[in-house]
Image (cartoon, rainbow, N blue to C red; front, side):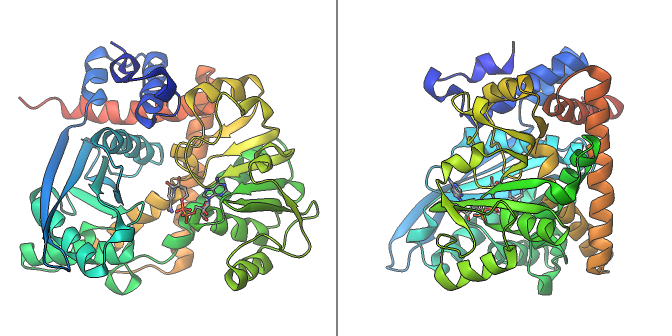
Length: 427
Ligand code: NAD
């Protein structure tokens, strides 16, 4: 039975449900690839799902119990890899979908990891640092036997950061009775983090965008780029693209967008935002409506804010030649078809934003080597992986006559399926 039928809940939520989007894309790629029915069954379900209840003493002396999850979708190609998010509305379904997503992302860029994801239901804005530390440490202790550099390697995600990773690393190390830096990535540099990690996702977006422009015979120096989201991914992509000579004509943030058809001065915009707290009112730019920015005529549109911004309701209005998905899941599966009909060249999220997990892989390698690379080495190796992965996806698309997203899923399914086939099923 196709995955989509199993997952459907209400019609209204179907298009924007990440589990259903991922399932629809899985089914389409599996069918095109002719993936064995049995392997499809294996890959539809997560290999391991752990739910823990975490008792913690709050600052006022009360005991509260939080629920946490860790899901390992597949470890066929290597240890599980994926972030841990803290949010009041985390669900097991969401964590499952994101874990599968990580399996495909790691396989597309051909790094030796499987896919995993974790989450704790909590509202970090209502918790002190001490409470967050106790929640993190107890959660780590509860799942300690499934973590490890050879088992499952978490990273930061929504509302978790370098500090959270340092607490996880320390708690795990205390249980193992030795320091084990490679158990998490996204750590501070002082604790075995990697150079180049903060820029890695934006850098990866720039590299694959450059490849796409070249493939379409467009000149990067005259390419107009529109970016939604000026945070870690969008801000770094803007800075690196501007330095490389791209013309960033528009940046959209949650409170407004700024436009300059000759190209925005990104360093000045960053300073302006730092000084004023917003990009709105930036000199040498025109203000435009935040949501209208998506529909500007341009060569490159880079959504780097959040999921489900391009849907069946607005996809027909996109006038970009290339859509580089910096965010996870910015396009719904219904919108995919509209973009394909309008010949938008989509660089799908599992390829476009995989620079982050690729440098996380480098961090893990460096921790295990105990030997740290300089930034040029990190960036050079990232470029090699992103360029090769782009070529792999595009050649699948050409060979099978499918669009890039389906091709990316096909590359991933092929690699994960081959690993399972070669390993065989242990019984
Ligand atoms: P971030 O919080 O640093 O940046 C997101 C930015 O988008 C913020 O500045 C926010 O104000 C802005 N924003 C929110 N709503 C908006 C709207 N409606 N219009 C315009 N701007 C809006 O987050 P990030 O780390 O840059 O992540 C962005 C996306 O990229 C997420 O989907 C994330 O899952 C994905 N991603 C991030 C990484 C990474 O390494 N950080 C890696 C892979 C994927």
